[in-house]
Image (cartoon, rainbow, N blue to C red; front, side, top):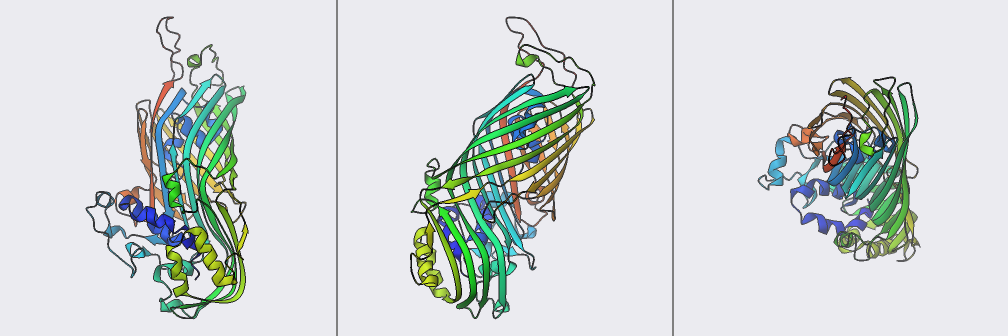
Amino acid sequence: MVKLYLIFNDVNFYLIHKRWGLIILFLVLRMVYNPMLGQESLGQSLGNYSGVWGGLLNPASLTSNKVFLDVNIAGAQVHFSNNFAYIPYKDYSLFGLITADTIIPKYGKYLYNGYYTYFKNQHHKWARINSRIMGPSAMFQNGKNAFAVSSSIRFASSGMDIPWETLVFMYEDLTYEPLQGIRFDDSDFSFSLLTWEELAFSYAGVIYDRNGNQLSAGITGKLLFGLNGGYSEFRIVDYIAIDSKTVDFYRFQTNVAFAMPSTGLASSFSHPFSSVGFGLGADVGFTFIKKSNRYSDNRGYRPCEFAYEDYSYKVGLAILDLGGISFHKDTELHTFNVEDVTLNTDDLDTLKGMTADVGMRYLSKLMLGDSNASLKDNKMRIGLPTALSLQFDWHALGSYYVGMVWIQPLHFHLKDTKRAAQIAVIPRYETRMLGISLPLSLYQYERWRFGLALRFYTLTVGTECMGTILDFKDMDSVDFYFSFKFNLDKGRCNSFKRGACAKKRDW
């Protein structure tokens, strides 16, 4: 199969010079793009001390925290998952890999793809990487109104509905005889990646509060500065591998676009604050709260005077990451629509040393007879990983809670980055000093995962893939997040100078 994914070859240089921390990312990026960086952070996004992080799951939740001021000092999340490649759990130790004490076995015949093996089934494949580095961010609530501002650098990459044999060919090469001589007719699958800086402003307010029933609404507006991006949008791929050197294409229709400096994607990591695209985004959400007390008289003059009001349960609904980024600088869009073309793998191997723009022109000459024939535009647009989010949180007893989260991705275009679908149940223990969350999630409606998040005052660390960390599950996923914050409780004011005005807490 034609290796159009080689347009991201420059990232190979960036990744292969790192130790194991990037090996797991590299193996799937190699798998999906041959080369080109947590999902929802449920352990710190759902909780009464979540603050600004809770606003990422639903902006309306900013009105229902136990703190009126929350300042994020540092935080990050990294998430990767796929259903094609894995390292058998018996063959690795995660901590050994990080410290370089473990020798990673090789499973294949080739230099890079030998560090992992793959599931032997014929299901459609998917792969996702989502990461976020949270910069200085803050949430502030004054009575019925809450405000937040956040800054972050985000990366999203996804491959969806990938034909199984495509990835087997990438792993085994055309020398894999069981797939030779078979005609494959594939359609409507895609690869995409997007890296951007995000500056977000949030507002949430209580719009109804009577007889123990409270309804809040929130919105987040985002300024998006695109650092780089790209996609391969495969409409029709009808082909047969004749032998180890020859591929015949009966029909081949695809759009390939990328935005990056002419020196390749790797240079975007060297100059991370030089944007080549711009866009707008938004989150919109609502939260209904059934309070424990039907009547309350929660008034104050200063933000700290408004006491926290406990609840029996609350329900939230939000649409996340509406919008996208348009690229007009260092951007190329190529279209291939050909029939009855034969390619030789010796010609394709030449692509490996080329940057994206040079490689596309070389491929255009091979398939269309003209190095400029495939180039159709110098701009493109990629959508954010939009999703519908539903949350439920029940205050079971004392410091014990049970939460539920449903994430359903919303796909508008084949080329857009895609979020993962998941359903999670999150029992947790929560006090001011200590928080323990145990997310149990069904990922992509097909894989069960068990996680753990620990909070000590304002430091939180967590993962949604404990099986990988404890080495009793094949390594096909990696997930980790942390945050370090500063916050102030509701209903407690500084007694300095003017005397105490704190209200007694009932939680």
